[in-house]
Length: 235
Image (tube, rainbow, N blue to C red):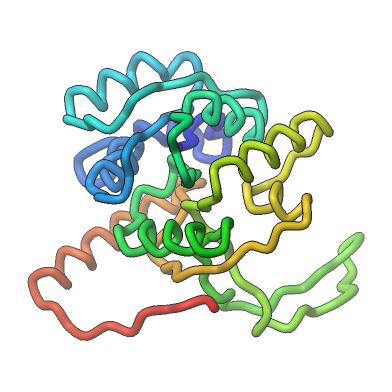
């Protein structure tokens, strides 16, 4: 499930259709899952006004695994619930991905799926780089140990019945978790972290597009001159 129903307020325009490397952001995201062999179907959750445009774009680009474009809600959790209604009942695990993360790789997707198949809930993550301060009223109250802090990414992957139950409960209780892992954490389920990448960025502001274009350029250069590369793993 690709969730692309946000208002893009911080971007200053519709980031899902902004051009990245010659094609819309959302198409790059769709293509990543289209090309992943372990993905059997794709559900796209988007704003009402974008549904027809997104469906046409996917069809023209040959995104054959896209089975439904569905309407999102006012909040992320409501959008995810809408998407869950469209997912096939035959699904064993469900991957929920941010539409604004177009640079996700096949390895990240597969690792998260394997993690969910083994542990029921898994998400890619990377260690935080900076020092984090917890503050109230502009005053620091604590400095968490950086060695224990990770930045969660997507796709976040879950056993199908687990995520359905967790999201339905979150909506019923009026909760608004900032990511889907929080919904299952709220019912006492442990989430396993898998390998993420600092390149798997979420496009939120115009500056992120500059970074994304630089990553694409770097990847193109690496393909021409491949070198051994250290992977970043969250365990």
